[in-house]
Image (cartoon, rainbow, N blue to C red; front, side, top):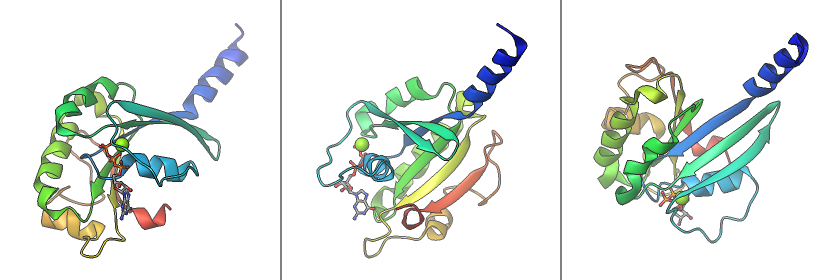
Amino acid sequence: MGLLSITRKIKRKEKEMRILMVGLDNSGKTTIVLKINGEDTSVISPTLGFNIKTIACQKYTLNIWDVGGQRTIRSYWRNYFEQTDGLVWVVDSSDLRRLDDCKMELDNLLKEERLSGASLLILANKQDIKGALTPAEIAKVRSLVDNLNCKTEYNTPVTMFDQRNLI
Ligand SMILES: Nc1nc2c(ncn2[C@@H]2O[C@H](COP(=O)(O)OP(=O)(O)OP(=O)(O)O)[C@@H](O)[C@H]2O)c(=O)[nH]1
Ligand SMILES: [Mg+2]
């Protein structure tokens, strides 16, 4: 293989990104992925394993891994960490009772060395529900991240995102 074709291959590879969507069960991960892909979201069931969607976004190919968030299957999340470029942590902004649980699981995730090179986006979902907290409130109330736009222990850039900007 010539140098040129090797270089082309590397470049092509760089345009492919692996995105891992995680968060507590019922936070809306599958719905978000289906919405991004323009699919019907009227009938959604809890994800018991994982779904992969490949979506073209500008010049990038995104391989989105949507992993089920029920408590009993959270221990399997670690099977999906390898080579993750972007981590999307989805929060149900209206589920105030589980914010502590949500923070604990995110804290655990951020200790994972295999995710250390990935960018983190925290997506405040279900903003349409009355009483839902805003992204800034979620970050503040439970110190979900210590300082917005700062980096975590593993140098992970953090962005807070409001789902209304997405759909
Ligand atoms: N009101 C409202 N409901 C939403 C929103 N996003 C998702 N839902 C609903 O929340 C429920 C759970 O959505 P899912 O997409 O299955 O959640 P999930 O995070 O994939 O759940 P698991 O697969 O169990 O981890 C469904 O009834 C969705 O219709 C939203 O932005 N607003
Ligand atoms: Mg799901």
